[in-house]
Length: 202
Image 1: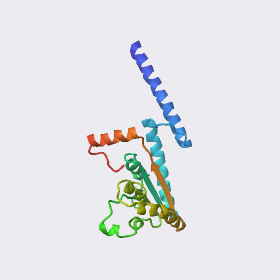
Image 2: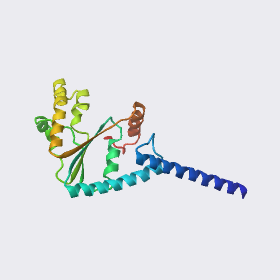
Image 3: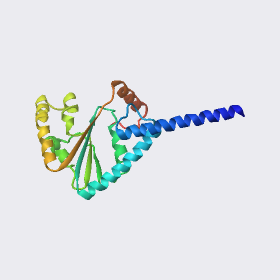
Image 4: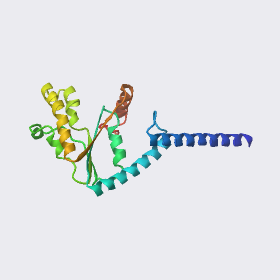
């Protein structure tokens, strides 16, 4: 009996410590003071809170007729796909549109480079999320040899001007870069090999 009571007291104490830690993590998240990964319980609570805020944002964008572009870039396996999924999970696909373009067709290759992206730009009351974007030319395409140095340099020269035009047209442009360490990236690549259901586009 005494042994069971002691075990119960230990479990209760452990639960209290965990609840305090989750509360502290939540407070830090709200202040933007997170250092290191959140505990699962705190993460789920914070995710739910932020998704509720995204629903409010959705209604505001619709009400004001805003046009928003959100660009997600980053290293392979940095978590772009999972982040976008968390953002779009509770909102309307009529407001939040995700765009992940495949390799360009021969016809698209003959167009202005930015042209195929502009076809997906938002109308009033829409938020378009690009899972990779025109910045492919600054990184992946150049590294993999899919564009020339001249095309790469030209892109770097024109990109600020194009984005200035986008902003002056009244579109809100938000850009995120997701980073991951070499060690963590290797682990995620290996996990994809072992689990074919894991996304290869994150």
